[in-house]
Length: 119
Image (cartoon, rainbow, N blue to C red; front, side, top):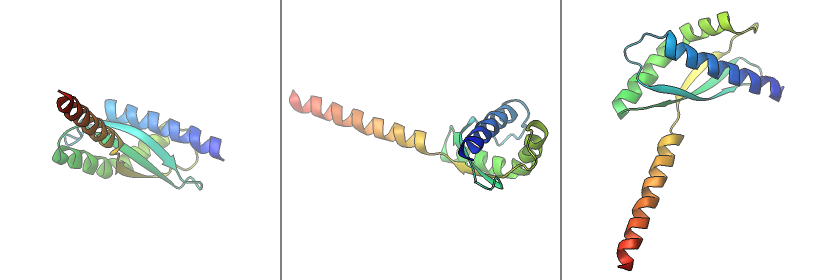
C-alpha cells in the first residue's frame, strides 16, 4: 500500500503543478509550488503542502485561491489520473522553506557577531 500511495502522491503533485502553471487563471494565485502531497491510506483525502512566495497577505490570498479551486482541481485530476476515486484535496501552507531561511539567517548573524568579536 505504501508504494501505491507514494506513486499516487507523486502523480498528484506533478499534475497539480501542471494545472497551476498552465490552466489555473485565478488572479489571487501568486508564485506557488506544490512541495508535498500525502494521501491517506483509504485514498479518500490528500493533504497538499504549498509553498508560496510573497508577503503574508500574498501568501494568504494564494492559499485561499487554492482552497477555493480545490473542487475544480479535483475534477481536473480525475480527468488526468487513471484512478477510480480522486481524493479530496486539503491545501496547507508549507512553511519549511521559510523556516530553513530563518535558520540560515540566524546562523549568518551569529557568524558575523563572532567575527566582529574576534577583531
